[in-house]
Structures are given as C-alpha cells and as structure tokens.
Length: 516
Ligand code: XMP
Image (cartoon, rainbow, N blue to C red):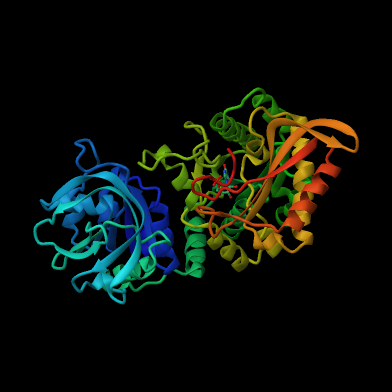
C-alpha cells in the first residue's frame, strides 16, 4: 500500500508509544507505515511518495555503544525528519551535539515554553503541557540546530535545523497528555512535509480489493473465520475479490462463548454456502492444553493447533496456497518482536506471534494496516450487519486466556455461564455499546462464602469492562453501585460454582485488557 499513497515512514526504535504515533497520524487521515529500525530497506526509502520520516522513542541510551544508530541513508533522502525522544537524541548525536544522562528519569507531565518561532509549533501556546519520558537529555545543541523550547526544569525540550528540515522533540506529542501534541504532528505533516493526499477508507477498500483480485488470480484461499469483527471483515473483502475461491473455515476450539458456534454457523452458512465449513476441534485443543498454566505457552499451543487443523481441512479442499487472517495493526505491534523488531513483546496474539515458524501456507492479512475502529467502519461500507460489527472484540484464543492456570471443560462451562449473564445484563441495561469490551475471568481461586445458612467454598470471577478507541490504551468502565450489586447477585445466584465476584480496576497501560 505504501507505494500508492503519499505517506510518512515511522522508524521504530522500540518505544511503547510507536503505535500511538501511527494512530495519531491516521487520525489526521494521512497514511503511514511503521518499520523497525533494523528492517529498513532501500525500497522503503526510495519510494517517491515518502514525504516525511519520524524517528520514534526507544528504551536505549544513545550513549550505549550497542544502541541503534541513525543510518546515513535516512539523512541522504533529504525529506523532513522529526525525532521523538530517542529519535531526537539520535539526531543530536549524529550532528555532533552532546547527550547527558540525567540522575533520574523525567517521567510524566511537564510544561514547556517555546523560545524561537518554529513552524512545528505554529498555533501552539507559548506555555504548553507535554508528556515526558526520558533518562537522557541534550547537553550541547548539535551544529546548525536551534533550541525551540525549554521545559520548566530547564531541559532542552525541542530543537530544529530549518535548512535541513530536521526537528527533534524531547517529549511525546503522540500521547494524549501532551495537550497540543496533535497540532504539533499536524504541523509536521501538513506544513513541513506538505503532505496532501488524504487516506480514506473507501480508497483503501477499492485498492485492497483490486490488489487481492490481481494478486490472487486463480489461487485458493482459506480464511480462518471466528465470527469476530476482524475475520468477518477479512472474509467479506476477500469474497469481493476472489468469490468462489475463498473457503471459510470456522474452528470451534471449544473456548467460545455459550451458543456462539451455532450462531456463527447460521450466519456464515447463509453468506458462503458450501464454501463455509465448521470444524469441531474442541477435543484436540483441550487435550493439548491439559496441565498448561503458562499464558504464553497456551497462546503458542492454540496458534499451532489452529494451523494444524487448518492444514488438515485445507488438504480436503486441495491446492490451497493462502491462509487469510484478520490481523490488525495493533496485533502486529504488540507481538512485533517476532519480526525482529525492537518493541518489547507484550503477548503473542494468536494470529501473529503464536503461529509456528514453518507453515505450509502463505499468509495474507488484508487488514494489517488498520485499527479496530477503522475495521468497523470498513465493515459498514461492506454492508455487514451492524450487530455483528459492533460486537465486543473476542480474542482468537477465546476463553482459554480468561481462565488463568489450568483449563478444563468444567471451568469453561462455568465461565460461559457467567459470561452469558454478564453480557445479557449489559445489553438489557443499554450499556453494551457504551463499553468497548466486557468479559469475565475465572480465577484459579476458591474462597469461603455463606449462602442461606450454608457454608460455600467456590470459585471467584473477576469482571472486566473497559472503554477504548482501539484497544491499545483502555480505561476501566465504572458501574454504579446498583449495577454492581445486580450483576454480582445474578452471577452468584445463577452459577452454583461461583460465590465471589470481583471487579478489575486496571487501565491499560499498566494492565492489558485480557488477563493472559
Ligand atoms: P490486550 O490484552 O493485549 O488486548 O490488551 C487488546 C485487544 O486484543 C484482543 N486480543 C486478541 N485478539 N487474538 C485476537 O484476535 C489474540 O490472540 C488476542 N489477544 C488479545 C483483546 O481481546 C483486546 O480486545
């Protein structure tokens, strides 16, 4: 896609915020691509439609000899560059400035005061709240650069070289706490890089369908359909592109919600007819996960077993070359270290990091440049039923990652019952669509309770409900006491095996949305 849109290249040096930079740029309807610093090819750099480069932050110190460096090839392009945090320090080092190590990390809110007039700070207030997260700082400004702002602790918070069109920020404009961060990024995109082409989903859809149509002529593709938003949209796009050569396989791994397998089958059988197949593989999955406690092992085993099941099914179809998956951009970022990138791996999303290295299929991931909300929009452009599109996200490994510790049939059934009550409550009380994702987690903890006059010793569930735009950051949702009371009462009275209900008050970060 990068070859056909004007775009920005974000070079990832390992910051947990890199994905947010991409997100903020996309919010301004500008296309961008993210590549790890060690995966930048000549082809990426020589793209005539590359109009600007952002160097991300990162966990390293440029003073460390082994830390990633700034490649001269990037500077030779002469396109505008914006370095953020570690990116700024790389620029500083490259142009013979000096970086010093602070005694303590500066982390959190800070006020900066702009000094010289800078195009990057056009329409920016003189005193501005920004988000800092760094250990190192500039001690000597590099040759040819000016200071454009200072923080209230007198740290140089931005520099620029107007002639070379190189800019550096010590703070993170991509984080919401940087109050005018969006304007700063917008100035970089429109005033400095002079980018004009807007990125619209309609264009994306048309280009993608044509791309798939041309690239997959005469090839058979199987698509792992889960009934979730991502795989549904993936299958609809592919169906538009290759029609009868698309075979959708729905693997029931046994970790689905109550009745879900049946509902999914009903919906998709109608759309894809005999090209839709449901495979009941719950026995194999349960067997493979027997006695497995470690979350990463669970994810890996599930990913691997999925592929095995696919391979077996694909053989029956004959000559299948491709496997389509509903991988989204945040999935890639969060398990990117699998591609040799620098970002710390959070968890192996089963459709990315959980896949085995050797596979018989080539993978296609038509949505991998998109965020969840964009996928939902795309789905409505494809006329997918809004109930389907607006369902809460459900992870590929399903309830298996909502049962910390060992999994068995009984635990799955308990969790299914709790989940059904919880979700029904949210729907009945018109809260479901206010919440981005809600689910229950069955804890490997039993505790003492009393019901009537009888002592109980039963399981504990923790409820989670979060608000979010794209699942990359999330806030816990706050119920009122009446709702908490009602939900807890219903669960305990209707699910015999549960006698305690907790609520998870953790935002992301520092938590993740799922527990495993
Ligand atoms: P975390 O737990 O990483 O989740 O904050 C972010 C979003 O991703 C979903 N999720 C997954 N989706 N395969 C998926 O298709 C996976 O392996 C997976 N793991 C987490 C999660 O439900 C949340 O919406």
